[in-house]
Image (cartoon, rainbow, N blue to C red; front, side, top):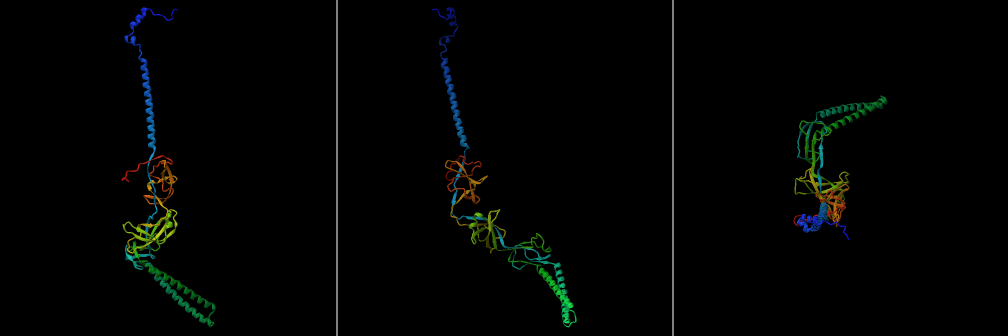
Length: 407
């Protein structure tokens, strides 16, 4: 049966075999296929390794970013205190009595006898005023009184004479009544003139400026030859005398402590110029009203000052030893507070390390620490120095406690 495949001539086949290279003529390229498969396998392994490595790096980056996004916080616990803590408040010291002495008559300062710091007794002369105008007015008033008394005498004589004549029917009743009325009128003129003389004599007594009570002179504006006028607006006064033997101390007590103030309770008073020395004052009274602006009750303390070591106008501190209320008072450092739109708050952390915002009210601000009135329990874990970006429910990282001895 004849074949469809064409046959090459023997000479042509021999010529082609003669032209093929020896390596190709013997190997027939059998190694190319296994090499290609191996290259593909290596490429697949490389791609898979790159994908795995990139996935691991991406997961590690996410873990690192998530860890970095957590806020690291320090935790503190509120301290409970049931002991009687001294309540220290600023106080103002004032004299028991203070009087600014103003001139009651116009004139010139003739002399002054005391200066600031002088201790004076009640009625002691402080200064003398020369009043020439007042002296002339008094002389004129005395002359007017003498004239009125003379006219009164004449009117009385006339009234008596007309009364005797009326009894003899020598004069009419009308004339007698006129003389009697004239005597009454002259008597009234005498009383008016005498009152004017008494008024001016009373003013004459104010030429002598005297101390109203025992005390110390704290201010003097009197100068020899200076013109003074009675009733001058904004007049500071010639002298200011203060009774420093007993002092009044005023303290603004916060409303939350006002119920614990009782009359007669003691308070320890200190002043900066006498470090280490304490004075005992007694609560005399309170204003019985809380100031709308300050939210505090004004309390008045009184203290004897025989030294006198305390001075009017001193800035002082008054410490009250208040009785414990029975319930423990929670305290936090001021660094734990946050100021939010809804009010004062603190951050607490639960068992799942999630932060929560707790709004609180303060019972008393002690400066570096505060007393908590409401909003916080004794067992809470509070964040110290919370970040401003802290949100409710946010996951946080709790800082490792510092090694022992580092505080």
